[in-house]
Image 1 (tube, rainbow, N blue to C red):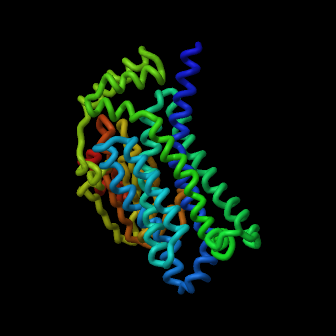
Image 2: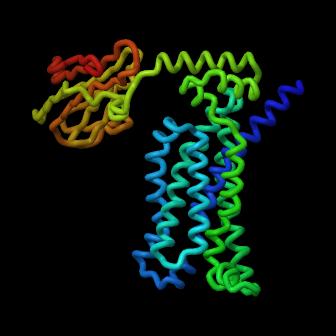
Image 3: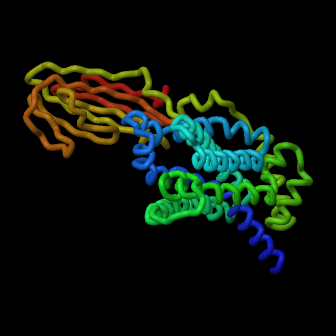
Length: 368
């Protein structure tokens, strides 16, 4: 019982350290809200530069997200989280001490890089570090920390604005906390960034990443400390099996999960003003819901697979199956459609009777 408790405490502490990346994400994203009017006034910004100041961190975030996956696969989750902490710290220090608007933009871009890296690697590290039965709860710590970071940024901004009338013995402190208080707002990130950076040196590398790098003994020691020897053996076996069966490449991201509608099209146009027609569409098989056909009068689609209806020339059926006045022509267009990953056969069929005789019918293998 004692060892289980110790393992749970260790797990929580490590995941809380990683979740600080989420706190900094939330704080750095939201803190900008209190600085916009102040920065605009101090640097005499026009509308374009004001928008650039607000949004430039998002550009850094996009870049950070784009590169963090590859970097963490190559160098490890821990090292890349350390990189994100350094980026956050550099941004906070730089924004506090800048002497020009251009420098402020540069350091906000650096902060955006930190946001992008942390948003990718921190939850990844938590999910790989946590046993499966705790994984959802532990990853939610990241989201909780992110939300807390947003809230703290609003309260800290409000507090600093309320104390701009305070006087300080140092001219530099007076400038940061009073005359140009936006520096203090952005600079408060120094403290959580520093805590995040120092704490990361105390946590281990992701055991899953270690296993993928062939460092089984080191990974197993970490897993035993988290969840015991038996669970560690199961996790090692599971990772090995996944690694052996893992297939795929970047190209698969651009492969559609669902096939496009079949090139088979069923088109029938009835123009006889005295025609009496009956239409039935039906689907069958384990993927029948995906085998779709549509019936329309004058461009309005009325029926889908599995419905049956009839009508007379000059009459149109609405979606409830009631006849309303309309004119021909009638068009029947079928689109066989089936997800690639649904097993078994699926088909749809239709027939059209004109003046009591079958005028046209057809069947199509869905997805063919």
